[in-house]
Amino acid sequence: MSSLLGMLNPQNDIVKPIVNEVVSKRIPLTGTFELTRRCNFSCLYCYQQNCRHTEELTTKEWTSIIDQITDAGCKFVNFTGGEPLLRDDFERIYEYAFNKGLLLRIKTNGSLISTSHIELWRRLPPVGVSISLYGKSPETYKNFCGVESAYETVMGAIAQLKTNHIEVYTTFVAGRHNYKDTHALYDMVSGMGVPFHLFSNLTPCDNGDLRPLEESLPIEERSSLLKWFYAKQPVDWDAVSSLWVNNVRRCFAGLAAYHVVSTGEMILCPMAPAPSFPVYKGGFLKAWGKLYEARLKLIEVETKCGRCGHRAVCGMCAPNIDMRSSKGEPPKEHCLNGKRLHQMLRQEGILL
Picture 1: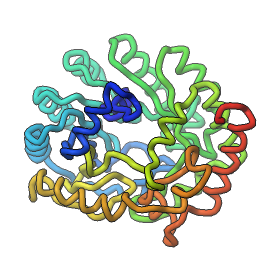
Picture 2: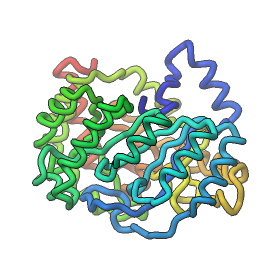
Picture 3: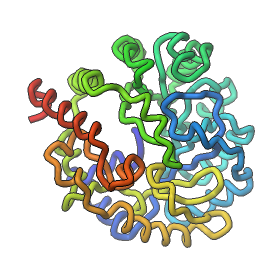
Picture 4: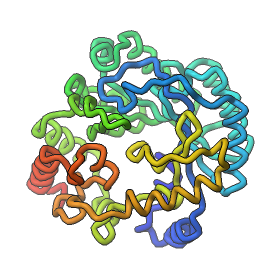
């Protein structure tokens, strides 16, 4: 399960009433806690690569926020970073959140998973451990994230999670320096019985720096890769199309979801790092109230993507467009990429 909201597909007649109630009442059902911006990798694509500040909340401050979110109705939390396992108090924060009744997911690069973490997750099972993958060899790991030894460590961690019956799934981040490993890595991970997801839509730094986009795949390579992947793992295109309502790409940010950065500020999501609202100092409910106002200004906006016939395969939300361009439109190369991918998927019968 990638997220709790991922289960709440508004196309599903059984869960539609639940979705409607959660959204209409603005219940903050799911949150993401960026426990730290520190990381032991230096990935070429990372949207945090030039803002690795060390300022972060204390254990007590995070547990205070956990108290507030559970009182407000939150049921699901993602722990992410940076690399969340770099925090010495990760296990204490995790156990506190678990004992408050929260469903938990950990997003990690997998290189720091220890015997202690395995024992913790066996005793207090997470919904899942999501591991980002960057290649199928030490050499690729060295080229893409700067840590050659991490490859063997990460693969060993995945095996340990499987052996101990801890839910694990992977996301391969495909860029110029590692995309040729995709097929072999997919075969290996799938052979282990572990779900494999592909991510190739790289994003700028959250301060507007466009350097991560330099790692983006050229149009032909990315289109071919996605065509291959969608043939392996079919997409529910009707569900994707349903994300667009009145030419606006919908999401749950500010309606049922929120993101808290390492300094304790609430934002809509990493694509919309401003405005931000203090949670620990100002209170969760006050920040949550202001987040809706931010959503109306930043997300509920009609864009060029919303009027495009290719939007199902490449359409971006308004905040994503704003991060990439000061003109309020998606970059031309992104549109060309989407058009080419759409054509290829139609030719192959993957998309009607």
